[in-house]
Length: 382
Image (cartoon, rainbow, N blue to C red; front, side, top):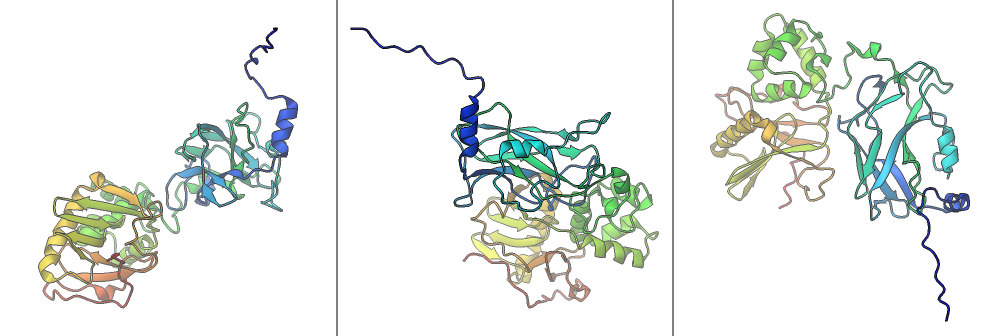
């Protein structure tokens, strides 16, 4: 009896056009998505980050339930630029890959590639971080005067199902010349310290701060919490009280983001915000918030906070947005512990963009009195 054997299929190089069309016509629930908005404005030569100064992630979302999903294998991705007009009338329209590709923007003649950095990514477990990305040219030369950053599955890769491309909102890219000496409102934690009002780039105050290792807005704010008088002394008499107030007021508008810094030992764990203010302390199995500390344990916790400051770069960092089990941190108003250099005790409250509260909350060391502000405590989960 004659056996019916078919020869093995040839290696797949490119799907047949009918197969491509079939995939294009499929309704898909899978879409590439940028996990956060971009920090605006965007300037040429500046890294593209989220509003908290963190890297952007590309995630694979199942639109049927809004959850992050993944394929059983890595996905090769490509970052491109789109014309800002693409899908400006209806961002939910089901475009085809051809429509998407026809709206990509290339560099102008004689210019460098429009995007520089990490343009080819590999997605694993539904996530692909963008760690280095920046524009090399402004957006003033196209009709819409706006770009979108977009992501698609790399050309020539077939996963058997259409994965819809993702893109950001449309935005203007400005030339970096306007960014050189610009103050940021609000400043970001990672901004160089000269972005603060009254601190001129390469000026006397900037040089004094850099010589003491105070290079970023975060460095500035941390020292103002731990050693307020030292910071004032570094800037010296050349900075008047009025200038000092303006600089501090500007610094206080900084958005702290969602990172929590953890310092722990055999019998303690303390939780700090990004500028070294105490959120919560766990000592020998007991939990203390700022209101709950007595004068007896206060000095010990202040000592731990100073130790954490001294070893800041070795602290464990968690993101409360990405860690559902960190439910002790409430959003909005929180009560935190200020650690002044003179050991004054001050329980302060702050909104998201106001870390220090009212100046009347500061008390002298000799008083050692706790000031209670009628705000929400940090949730302890107990």
